[in-house]
Image (cartoon, rainbow, N blue to C red; front, top):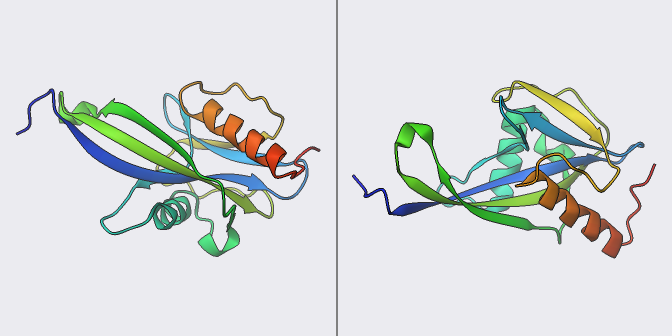
Length: 152
């Protein structure tokens, strides 16, 4: 058993899905206490891209072939996390977020979340300061720099 002062490294990946149809919208999934994205832990030997596509398909039901990933967008967050069921064990979790376009909003098949919501793309967004807001800021900057229009 490891000492509570040690931390174990975990890798995870997910996708921010945004629609091509207007008004542009993005998908967030609802846990009991927070908004999140479809994401999950990387399996051994799996790349961030493979994990993100697999987890998004598993948690929303959308076919990964329907998602067009932005080839040069990658947002990474790293933070210390403690799972309640692991006692005092600390995990250094690194999450890679990719940006994926889909044709239009759909009703996800929920497998791990209690609900979902399609939010209108109208930056700046103030949804969750620790993870969602920094990701959305990075996406807004990416879109502005790549001269992509997502305005209604």
